[in-house]
Length: 267
Image (cartoon, rainbow, N blue to C red; front, top):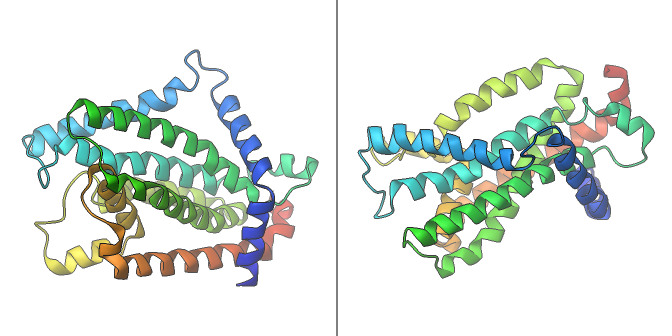
């Protein structure tokens, strides 16, 4: 618990630095591309189109989900995925790829995953803006459920940060962890009901799928963006989610504080 509190204090006290470094990260990543940041948006949109063609048009024959057009239902989940996936992957290698920077600057190493995650968050905000436009253009409309969105965004960021604390520490010690994570994340998309519904699955499998904390976020985004429900309607699941996140954060903080003074030794 003390390690978690110390890590969280480092994030709060260095928030300005995290924001500045995240902006620099975005600029440096796209500096060699003519279209720059545009590629960060085009790639997810291309993938969304392919997923809609295969799962929506091909498999579901365009049938809606609970009265919501499948393309909007699917895209609400993919907006989450296109933040979660790159943020976790980049967060896992954030420390060992920046050891040289750490040796030249004086700031807490726990902020490295934070500014990497924040740099991906900017792309997430732009995708959300495009999604809002699509919802309005299709006549679906926005509802008061949207006031829940900041809560789910915060919950998603904390989940990614907790995972990144664990994986960035382990990846610095053993590089194979990052490779294993990449393989697992590829499967994780299909283990989370983002592209398909779980309604036709047996009850025990549905319960198992809901143990995945990302399921809570995906469904929460759909509730907020498409007016499909309120957070207070899932209080037990909300409690479960935060118990899992806090446990992950405690584990990640403990590992980070234990090994951070030895990171340079593993390079």
